[in-house]
Amino acid sequence: MRYYEIILLIHPDYSEKLPKKIEKFKNIISDYKGKIHKLEDWGRRQLAYSINKLHKAHYLLMNVEIDPKYIQELSTTFRYSDFIIRNIIMNIKNLNQGVSSIMKAKEDKLEKINVKS
Image 1 (tube, rainbow, N blue to C red):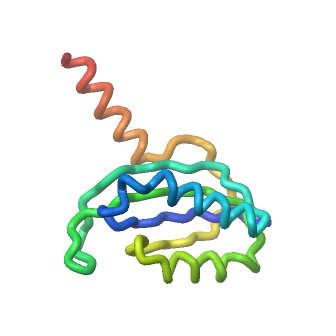
Image 2: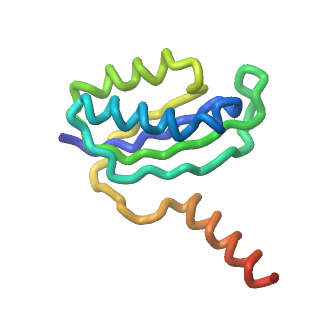
Image 3: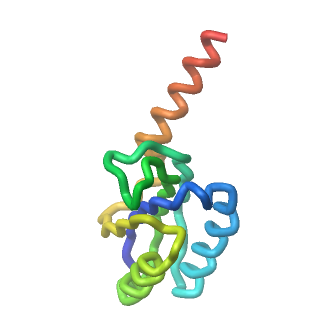
């Protein structure tokens, strides 16, 4: 089993259906005998450039442990999903259980707002 970091850009029209989609991802990974160690919903964010005339997308990060032979099947599943705009699957050597830098920045921003109130 290897560790992988998966980042998904989900069509903004599917943001409200995201909990169902996350359950679908969890089921797919568990069917492949994998395990999700970290799942972060980064929310709707501005894209660096337009993709299919879209300027925003919903970002999702997953750190998973899965057998390498299932990665191609997982990638194909993501590629042919109509609600996923882009995906990237990266092999990582060590699993990072901590909060990602994007979520940390989001939390810091919320703390600053709460302090000002």
